[in-house]
Length: 153
Image (cartoon, rainbow, N blue to C red):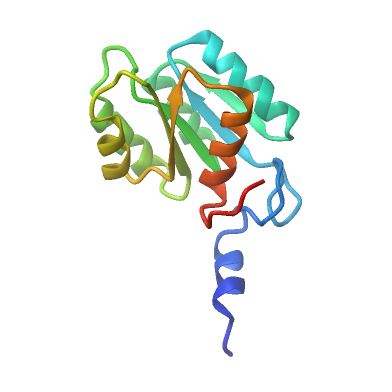
């Protein structure tokens, strides 16, 4: 039996996003987002924006907390701050990718971090987002990460 490629992808990865906006996947279930950021204000902004859009959001401050959260559940998207204190960010990002291989990754970074784009691209990030940021930029970056075909919300 021949299965069209688009349907095959949907069957293999039921949590993948469709063309609609908001925090629901193809099955109408909530999408799960893990936000790893050292700044409480940034975590709160992601939580407020994404919760309003229907996502289920888990917030953590450290890489260790992130890896524990990933052990407990699968996430559709991991938002990863490149400025985690005391961490080898490349190694940590690789650990996150290994622990959650089907999650898309959105890398956030300070506008002043040299080489951030290269790190994100080499780690397989679906998208990047420079901080400080706005609610609109968060929505667009999350949508672009989950729906990487270039369609706008």
